[in-house]
Length: 121
Length: 106
Image (spheres, rainbow over the protein chains, first blue to last red):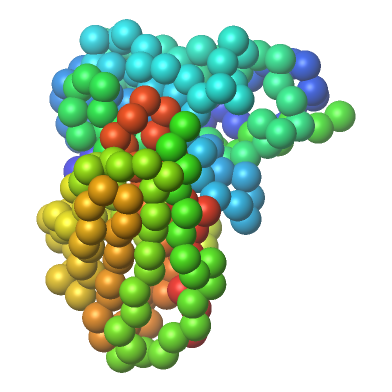
């Protein structure tokens, strides 16, 4: 059974940093691209960033480019999102999501339960 | 970026009804479209990919159609568990985008 468990969310002041983690199990982690998708509470979904199975980044949404960095540790079956220079508009649930292939693919077939990031002073 | 527009934003229906949700893309995405269902407080779940392919384990009451720029999700004979918010997603281009969602309510 595919399991994705996010951690690292919380309350952070504007301009500060936060690192999200996602522990994956139930599949061969390095065979699949992984993504972060966020959702402002009560609003729609926004793709944030993706990374190929070989650890090359697929890309970033314009809204986070230059501030967020995606990475993965295939030995630890873990996905990360380093978020710097956080803004109030980054407040959202952040979902760790598995893709259905290892390369540049955006079909999101399994989602974690999400972790809430709140950016506020 | 490719813009995805869903209609309606809210849909009221009853158990047993057949309903259709529409998703339009701002440019052709061939059949690179997925549908997700999200219940309150839960993560989205993939229902359909390649516009019309049902994910394994998803009820056959769900069906998808379309190609190019116009797509539909149809749910036949609504069940109480079907009431949720549905999102379409294009995965044709770099920087995948979602529709704004359709809330299906009783």
